[in-house]
Length: 188
Image 1 (cartoon, rainbow, N blue to C red):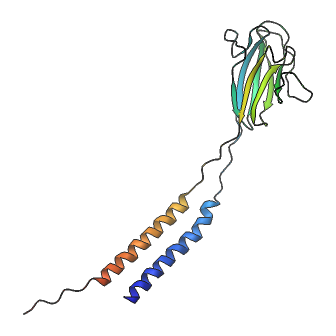
Image 2 (image 1 turned 90 degrees about the vertical axis):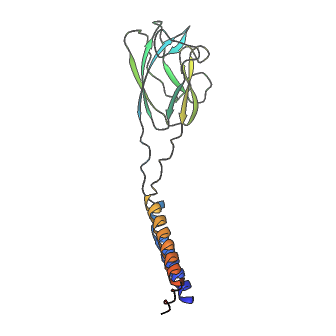
Image 3 (image 1 turned 120 degrees about the horizontal axis):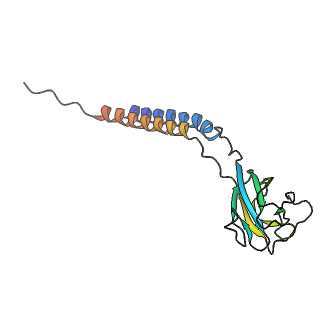
């Protein structure tokens, strides 16, 4: 009986050691961070109608834009009303263009675009506005979300768990076999 208990304890100890050796590798397995995406957005601006993804669907406020931190947005910009505009990423949401805020060059054509690139490096809800006409007339929201963490690889941890279960079941089966009393020999 004592040898059965010792066998079980030894099997359990071997399983625990196996898990403790494999678990740090499973936890520390390398995962690549989310890479920045290139996002293309076409915007049409109008002093009286606001912003839109096309010249016939303009709204005030303009359409919401959602990206992830690190994404590189390439805006293709048109002026639906042939007036001068510029696109400003209003980092402090005060609806005016402040020094240092990212902004496009001036554009005024309904048919010839200009492009403006912005790397979304500020997380939160920002405004995009026209720096010439101000955010009261031409604004929209730019929501920049933090990237989600990639899933971890738990393959080694799962394998270690299976090994432990097999060792425990094997030890239990061995103990059960040894405990079984042999049948007495048949009487002659």
